[in-house]
Length: 472
Image (cartoon, rainbow, N blue to C red; front, side):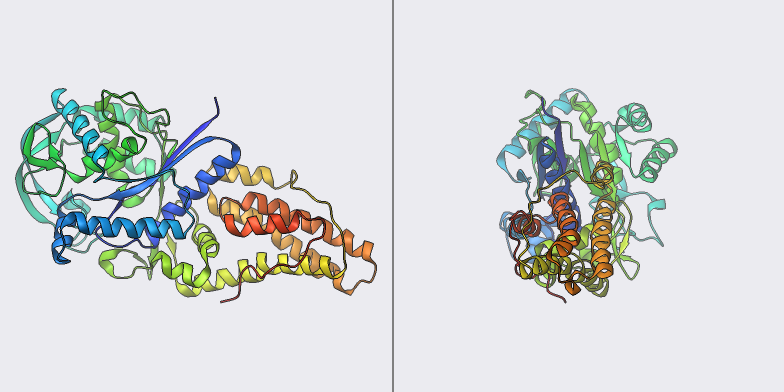
């Protein structure tokens, strides 16, 4: 059987339109899915939208809409954004899909009948922005650090999930990398949290929230939004509930997410899988936030960059490149329009675009015939190692080193000053070969651009094409 590769993004909460944070995760997942398809792996890439909960109901009411109408419109925005960015997902799941709802109810009933869900009361500090209970020590000056609002004291009847039952088993799996969490610092953070705090039983229902999935044994309660949302990673593969067999593509090879949702994924989601008797994902990979002036980008802070803004300025592949090269994958990145402009001009307009134009122009002008094909290259091994390690920015840097070296060769040897056609060919042929080999490896990142370059440089008579990246 072929190797398999199942990758997920988190499903995005539809209380507002897609922004650069959602875009970053989704493009990264797309790059990895395309890379594994290129390797011949059986690949499945899932993304989608999380559409239930009190916050959605409140936003719909503010907009003067019914919740379903509100989520339909916002889910369409996400689907349109991903289409415009050439995202190659295999499924786009919505938690309002009838099949998802049925499977969630079946899963929760199974956990309830097993004794892992029980009726109780939950009291604590509740952040409406996160839709999560917070500990005092999570707060900064009494405020949620992400939403800058004070959580409210809340107490209500709720069905609780016995997460505490699975604490020891989870800790062992995370420590020994059966559930791998990368970067390593994020693993240490989770291990430390479980060791110091333990895992408490967690609220799995809301009594006074109508916009949610009714519990099948008590319709006065709806499923807590996390319990509903996490199961998308299974239902997105067609899983119909605990009586259904484990999907062929499960467990996920990589689940991508930003650091603000690591803890719930590393604890609640994993404990749910143990309760359901299903394998845990092989890896959670946690990337950082984009920061502007040292602050996290977020809907509530009003400093959002929308994907369409980036596409309008840099084009589809320009946007994909800038996002993937902006910061070390796994770390925070400080971005600005000026930084994006500078990098776009340096790496794409003056870099790849200019090199392709110069070489193709010289070949056409001197009527030189080449017979080159994509071939083994000395940099492919380093590129592959970076991709396997999910060092996406490093993989791009390896390719750009080759392009810069080719540029330096042209500048040093000045083929445009030579009259001898064979001498010109000797200089241009290895450079053209490097361009072709780089283009092959660049396909997951910039599929439309490199398809043009590969077609252009695979012809015996290479002609100058349209400029790839106009300067901004």
